[in-house]
Length: 161
Length: 130
Image 1 (cartoon, each protein chain N blue to C red):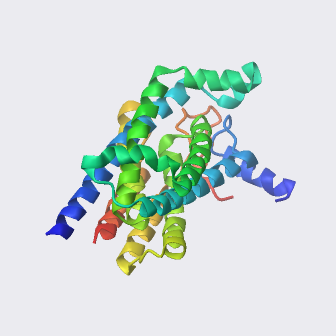
Image 2 (tube, chains in turn blue, brown):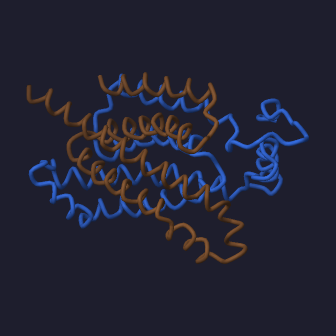
Image 3 (spheres, rainbow over the protein chains, first blue to last red):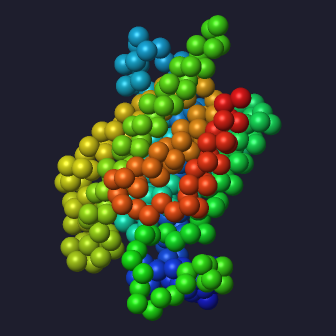
């Protein structure tokens, strides 16, 4: 990515809110949130499939689950996700960051199919796509609830400039 | 009959994940908002100062407790059902409950656009469940 592209991205985001500008590092954080949560879940699932169904009578088996290598890898990935997620929460609304991550569901379904051999039915795909589309509504909106500035810039006109 | 009860317990554990994660998310978000922009704190008192500001908060510790409950419920759910069902269902329903909780507990502005998204999410989850 060139410097001018980065400039453009942060420029269009600043149109929303002047104080909290969206810089390149924040896009990296968003990518870490999406990839960390997706692959974290997939590796947790891979490990738990090895361990087998937990029965509620033997719930304490769960305490040993983190010693399974795949579960451990999943936990490391989820920690990367969580740290990026926490950092992002200091500059954006929870109800903005959460939906931005739902793009990862498509990746989760793909990875579940190709890495774990899960059968993803047509209706399940439709459900996942509908969830992702629903959440796509959000990402055009402002990332942080702030009080209007005196300049009175209309954010929606400048979103996709 | 066995299949039906397996489906019920899968959705019950997904409900536990959703409630616990929402509590965890709201409590940690509340901590981060009260702490302020981490970049500014780091500029003032360094990375350790920023970390200490977060970790010493009681609200944050409560949030972590609920996230742990949510995590072990997630492990249980993943041992019972497909990740392509559990992950989207749990996370997207958490998104909807988060939007509701954000309005009530964090005073975030949840506009019409976000509510439309919430409805689409419900429809999507209903498709997942079939």
